[in-house]
Length: 165
Image (cartoon, rainbow, N blue to C red; front, side, top):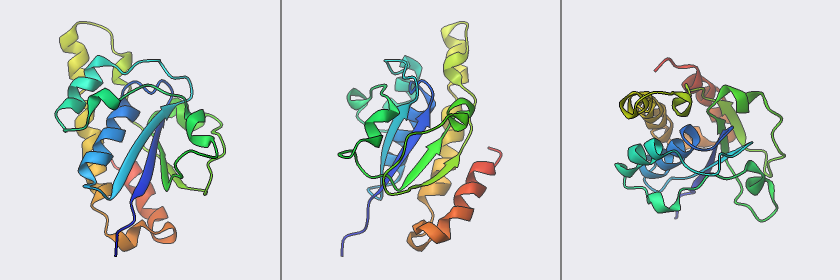
């Protein structure tokens, strides 16, 4: 019997850093149980090069990365999502499109590394947020299969988002 693959969408305003890093992490850390997607309400149009640096070490194919609108995932032919996480406070407060299938949603806020100005080293330091995203993702992808059902997981998803990492 084949295990269900859960589709997970990460939303942010610009879809250039946090949401893209989360997409790569859930896909690689989920070991086939999860397929990650990301999008933004006002996409930046390109993925931040420092996010690409972080993602490159995961084995995720960086050539597939792109900054895209969340409208893509509200269309009838889009993959149906099981989970939707906002990873920035701006996206969490916006009115989201209708998501077919009524996926579970939660807010996992992370500081915006793309907003940091300064030298490349200062920017790279800000992108260490990748480790915080990785910590939350590790907990999420480690949940037992029976916990991933809608009724069982609502409390767990919120608790992971409330964690200080």
